[in-house]
Length: 423
Image 1: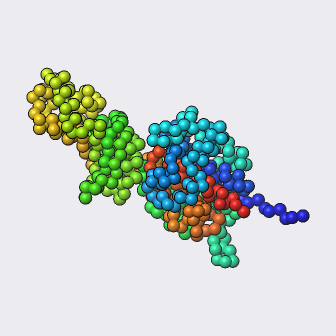
Image 2: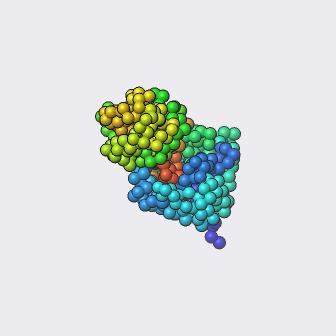
Image 3: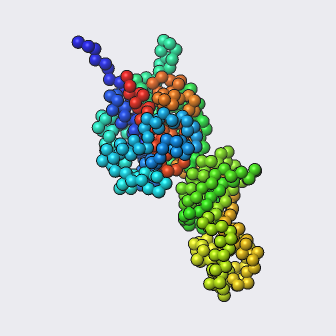
């Protein structure tokens, strides 16, 4: 009789997108999997992506995808090659969760309910025989040094003192963003305790705080089809340009385009960056001037402040009138060419000084994490501790909005699992 090979035990720490995916595939690879989740439910952050509709991935090519990764794109080459956005879409479809591709190639569940994605992943976990333990907080990773002097992961110790032995441990605890969902950076402390370098956390994909009272005056106003340019003040260099949707808030600016822009604003300091908004990107200065002249003919006997309702949303009129320096009570037919030109300049280049990012707790994604040079990109295994793997936001990689960050979590989770599950 041949000797039976003992079942490999894999512990996954963290029940978010990366952890759920890791546990599914470790189970499929034949390992005995325990997933430890400190909260009372799985996939909390998945519920809030895409405004609760769950922008699950982006239907693009590998090269296009890597172009959307702000930090360490090459590190993700293997993970994304082995499990692409199209593979993720197929996985959901096959599991009975059809998906649809929308504007910007963003992929959503057809029902537009994030809970359907989480439910599908939870069902796949069940099918893979994953044991989930809720309310489990990990105090430390257990290790031993083998004869060859290498450090090996041997399991985890929980806060209540329980030791859970395992041959492989996958850390997928998330970053520091949205602490209410449970991601408070605890995974970084576990990795650091074993000698890993943690690249400092900065918010990425985060709203911007603007100087002055202008934004507060337009609070709640959402704009579509706006041109955006982020300029570094010291050398007047454009660091980011975009076109799309944004929203004015009491503190400043937010919305998809602003969140993406924030990932390019490194070493944030008050006054270091300026936001330039083109409110009428479809019209050049000459066309906009003609448009104004037509409106002014239509409202020729009105005051200046009452002549812009065709051109601007009502919430924006008073702030723009005030910024233009033109007397609001001046009759439109008395405006000179110079004043009109000034107004055109303002509409094509509305300038706001950025004071800061909103707090890291409001960031959708945190930049920073375990230094990728200390992790093998072909397996997600730690180069310092054998049998320890990383997935998702634990790693120092982050991408722009559009489903890319969730796909990174899925792809790295799957690669870590297949590497860990292999005998």
